Length: 480
Ligand code: SF4
Ligand code: FE
Image (cartoon, rainbow, N blue to C red):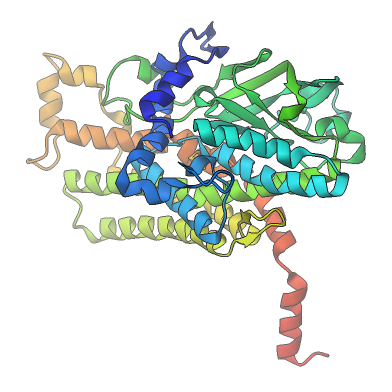
């Protein structure tokens, strides 16, 4: 496995085409707006090196028997699924942000079973191709991104009905040695910190949409692939060099708009091409795994937010007031409810025909449905406990200024024993998670990441088995 240093060195070798604030970025690794997100991914390498966390962060590869980072592994048991969620909570706690490496893990686990099933049906050889790819990922401990969300154009139209056919990523040419693809993937988490990207279709497809039924892997610096960096709230604060004002100066996440402008993919990297009836299962499984993931990562970030709100109460002198105590209890209750869902869908996991383990789909969707709500309530309570100062405080520069500094020290003090700067740091951290750059991962991503609420409701309806419940009621009520 790679050390964090080796991981960062390997990213430097990539020749990524990245645009940010209207300019091509020469060196994404050291760019101050991008670097915190890289640090979050580096944590997945760092913790894998530490004895204390080896049990969660690593596992043995079912392909080679060697110890690999869990982010590159295929789940072999329900316990593996549980450990995945625990690992994600741990990383959320350590970074207070999105650590980005899960999308690839979830994509690879979904592809593992769907390539197996497609081969059985069509006598293709996607599964062995995929295993070859996976083996390299594990051996070199690479970061893989997972790209699913097409830009979609007019939502009222199918992919093939769009005025511009590229609004869903598609095969534009089939060649002897591979395929040419064109399109874009939106909201692409962690792309600039990844070595490879796995592309998957975004929705179940019809027979006439064969060109859109494509899944493949591409190196992130493959010709024709380029990235436009997504803005986050308060992002340019990272350019100011203040560790206080950004709230979390070490870690973060990022999303890009990824453009595939006639990208060539050799056949060895193609895992689905034209088999439209395999697409539904691939989309459902990837979404299911990622909905499970949120029962871990958001909980870890929630732990940091609850800790920050509790500290703010300590620093404000309100920690013992019963309404404050009750609000903190409510935050813990909501956060642990999310965790319970993440654990439940994992413990109830089952083997697929390919042998790897899949989560309980109903519980994974219930997990994510709760994630579309509870972090918002936890954030609301954190703001309530923190007080309005979290958004009205002067900057660090004013704190350091000769004329204004002493007055900020004096008048923004809470409890006498606590330095004003500590109070400012904690309030800025709350601002960061609820309104700033980390709010992308904690709030809006909780809504839309792994699919918006309605997507889970459709799955919940499908998995609900209402006939079974109706029969229960009939029996009890004495209806033949
Ligand atoms: Fe992982 Fe959570 Fe980020 Fe998705 S949102 S990549 S599950 S940390
Ligand atoms: Fe996500």
